[in-house]
Length: 447
Image 1 (cartoon, rainbow, N blue to C red):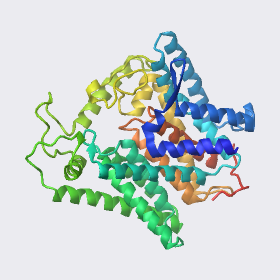
Image 2 (cartoon, helix red, strand yellow):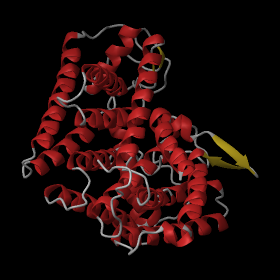
Image 3 (spheres, one colour):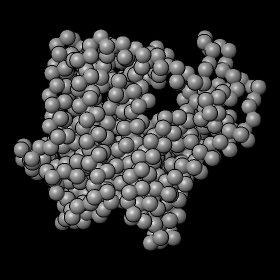
Image 4 (spheres, rainbow, N blue to C red):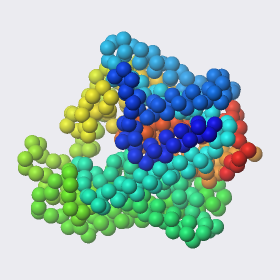
């Protein structure tokens, strides 16, 4: 169990800290790369069988999310075999990862049925997110550079927001002054990384998640939950006000300023500030072939979504399968070169990708899993039972899951193992807390 917990929590911590970099570390066996996510799945499955036995991997009795996910795993396996038989090789396995990372759902529930706690999962995510944000902010300040107007990746901002949520939920009057100083420092660092990302999807993520928990807490009289929501809204308003203020006080320039590569700190911050408002700071170098449009991130998504819908309509029931080529936007819009193991060409809407690859019924089944989990968790917040996890912790887990699901509306979610695994982990947390199949462990504390 100690080995299982070390690998499980270590994987979450490292995924939050370094995202794609950590996910791309791999071993190669017969020319097949085994990435860290696959290695973690393999190791955790072997250890879980040793702890619980083969039959103990699944909750008893099986609830709707478990049955639905087992059906998806089986159907995904069929599509993967078809893709391999058609000669798509690693590309078929890459697409199969859209589904098989769902195995983290069962591994997490097995962890929570023994000595595992939700607090340790949140703690690993918090430590990794803050460490990653600190490293990213430090690297930017020491050597400012941008990737097409972004000072940090979108997933960096998502993990930074996750850390802000966890810290705000635990920020209380009972904390020691030193702990409060550390908490405030963590919030400032993570807020800076969100700003550096220039990733406008984060505005959608923050707004959707805060709107949901606000509506939920209107029916909850508990002061701690209401205080948490107030702190979250105050933080969001300060962040937006800072973005608006920076945009107002930074004048545009007539100089030509490239938005990619190494830059001066002032130019980098100015470009990021303008990016949040869909405007352009400076002009793109004339050596580049096509005119630059700062809202290109919107237009290329619109094109990708349109092409994805066309592919969905061509195979609405069973999908186009795994491995079948589907470059939905030009390779020039990718930050990695197209390959059998890259997500270049994805629709930047993870739900359209699911519908395109698996078909509409299977995509709706994925949606039904998470809708059922969110509704059940919301009901448990309003009407806690005798074994229910402490409501502030349950609220944080719910908000984290909603944030990740919202991120998938305009970004890569199930296509990115370091994000997909977290989605299924927190789906399992909500299933464990709300379901009759599992019970909350009491031997070492539950919060």
